[in-house]
Image 1 (tube, rainbow, N blue to C red):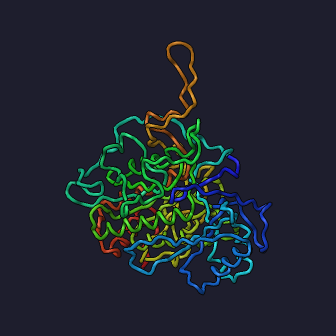
Image 2: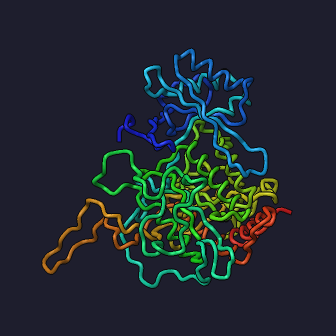
Image 3: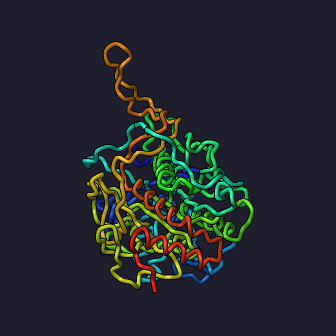
Length: 485
């Protein structure tokens, strides 16, 4: 798709223009090395709680006016039940006087060049995160292919209760939130108590989309969209590893695999509110135990390994409330971190155990961010898999077998072979409900399922410190990371 046609969904219902930053062509006043990244053309994000005397925001307003741009400010919607002073943020919408979208790169570069070091860290692009899938050209055995599942569906040990997160005897099940493209039609999930369908906060979906909403902003494609079924596949992995877990789909991603940073932050803030209401026992809400994030982005500054953003603060807030966050490492076949995975504590892996390089990176009062990369069937690191000290562990991620929406059937056709009705495999017909797929996206839910399974005997409804302690025990048992003393 030409750059001019790149768009990403806005939670308000519109589609925002997207630009790709080309380090070879982008003007830059600063002595920094740029990295390629996608960003929302007409948005900037300012971290923190801005006031009238905020120098960074004042400089942006001044430079916007000098360029004749119209600026509209939108604060991040906060979780009302937050138990501490929240991290706030502001997204700035910039348009031309005629109403066309502006391109904020030059404005950001000017502000960053003139602002002090601390102020400079507070303003950044509204990055576009992409779901992780193998890059073209890597020698991965397969991307996505129809397959069979031989054998019965995963079987739950606990009887069904009055809600998906409750068992027959009233015990809390572990809840795994799949923040992705939603969960489509499938016999394992349709009409069953496995999935928490249509979860809302104050009458609105937690994520960008409702479950039944069309997810592309373009004309219908003849080919099956590249990320169609991504969330369903992840949910199937979780269900196979821990059948007794309840799965909460939070739909943030289009079938093109994209979500804007601000929208993801907003959805996670709403997920935090859902979780806090569940911890307090409010009807219709469940505590969330694990969050799976199979997406990421590269900041525009190449050496900015400690990139700070509004997204990082919200992930930390989830972890303070006893939620485990599992992120996939990415599929670029390199050691350069992508985010949010790059915010994880650095470790040294010895076999299947992770040892922290700095014990000061681990905190007893909130859970660690855990990052998973992909292993081949023989246990070696997959050729496409990112890796580095910021990666906590390896889990199966090549030719994984899992669920696909039974509505997934693209325009490609099988090849008829001779007489007798023989034909080749239809390459994009997933109406059988199963596929093999490769990527760190599908290694992350393996760990998420293991954590959920470990938590089965640690179902603590509250208080928060008890949930954090139980989560840390699960981390120790599944990854080897020691519980901070």
